Image (cartoon, rainbow, N blue to C red):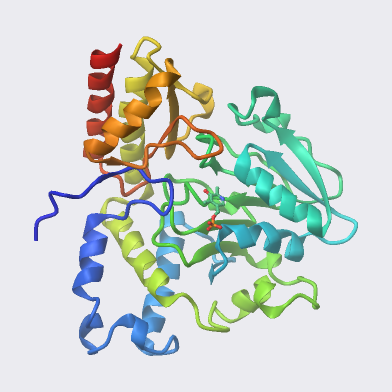
Length: 364
Ligand SMILES: *Cc1c(COP(=O)(O)O)cnc(C)c1O
């Protein structure tokens, strides 16, 4: 089968998946590994599914070198439900949820937490209009901090933490929805990490939660069972039916990462890909302008504008005609955004840089 018509997919989410993964899923779609049924048509308690489930957890542990005190949980409700579940489970009366305000996604997390209990903005990028990620030494925790919550990659603004704060005994919680498994990092620094799958891990429908065991045990007993972390923690995320197909797809994506050399190799490739596009911006003599302070730029979501904003409509229209998808910035921000998640090939980034240079030649 020819895939010469695959788009240059820069969608922000749901986003590109590796072609090899799609092809393997296609090959096993109707008959999963010889059982005469698809994986969607069997019990979530069957040995065939259970193997996929447990293997996916093991792959997370392997790729992130997760200590034994952590479990990999599979939830539904997206990263957005985690905005509520984190404070519902972890923000006890008399404590304060500390948050770093980095942009639109951190803001949403804070809004939900405020409905549950007391919150404190421990640092904010507001003074720079969220073009800079606050430095670790700018973060001020309250003495009664239940946790510090950070958004490691602001998908809409295009900013990313380059260095994580050391919070000592205060649990560090992170929304990694848009940069999970894009680079190696010390996961043992974090008490809890969550990520909706549809940016960098697989299709939508599953949210991964990596949780240190001490975070699961004490959620309030009156919480609905599906909102309690201990339900997932204690029953291996099989209290009820998990999103089987999404987890299966994520399994294939994680195997693809392992096959491609793991997180160090993925990061090297992601850096090269982002560099090609940031170079096209920075070497354009001001024709294109990056929107984030260079020290806080994201490797996953590259936001930029045209100095002559009148040309942006033309840029988007011509890019679409040439097979580029998803370059229009988020509706709340406008301008342009190229999302260069793990599965976006280097060739697509190179093609975009070439298109940008060509557009500048014709319109500069
Ligand atoms: C996309 C995104 C979310 C929301 O994810 P859903 O799975 O749609 O709820 C939250 N945080 C970040 C950083 C995101 O990129």
